[in-house]
Image (tube, rainbow, N blue to C red; front, side, top):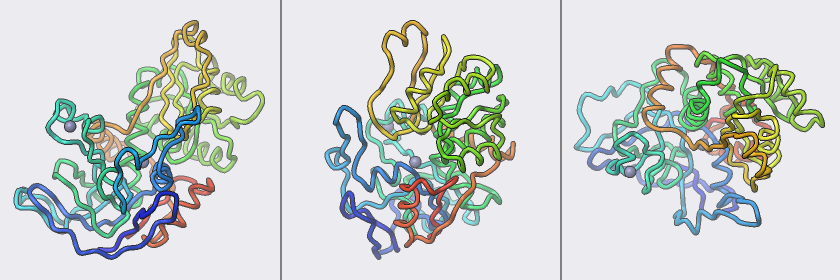
Length: 351
Ligand SMILES: [Zn+2]
Ligand SMILES: [Zn+2]
């Protein structure tokens, strides 16, 4: 197998050739067709997150072993199966892999909330992922057939799509009452515009500082697209929503975006923080109480939510994200373009 590895944090990925993988027990070795390039891969390559107040979450201190193969949005085909895998799996199908694998044994895993497992084995994060011609999947329950969907269009659903869906579920009861405010029209924000519609919500109001991304949001069906850097951004948002917003989803998670989202939010409203850009919270504590707002986080999504998402996407024809494909050995170029903010939609590696 051929892969692109993180060998030292903060430096470019390095190509490697390794022995082909051999499956054990319930494992399935898959040939990777497509691997989405996620913004969080930039943090993995860099070795950590900025937590604000001068603090940093370090993957090295958290025990991430190098060399590491990133990639948590795989579409793949079955190549070899372990002895405990049932014989009736369709080997001709293309599968999207649920990457947020837990231990499978704890209470959370049994409820399907493997993304919250205390001993996670996330593909591309804790174990080797899909920036490779092969990926090891621990169990068949993580495989979802994608039918005739193009692999590069299905791949982003594993993280980008699921993260977006789970975040929107947290304000689902508000989506048909008042337009939601979606901050950030990168991969997640654009995906959210289509999903809000499929979930029966009103066209959302999108905020982004990049004119190209604002246009992409409008093309995807947003009711309005507002420049978050404008001095009167808050007034523009309120005007576009038609009242003070009740639901804000921050897909960036930077100090400036979360400040704007909080200031926009009306009384009794809910803001979901999804993005992991980093920094410290800038909210006025008194106003949290006076406005009685709910500020909550969302991190990927559960296995049952993934099943719901796949049903929604295959039954309601949610528009795919615009994608730009790269070959596996152009992984660094894809990541660099993401750093520069030059990717509209999603970059996808095609090993
Ligand atoms: Zn991701
Ligand atoms: Zn578990």
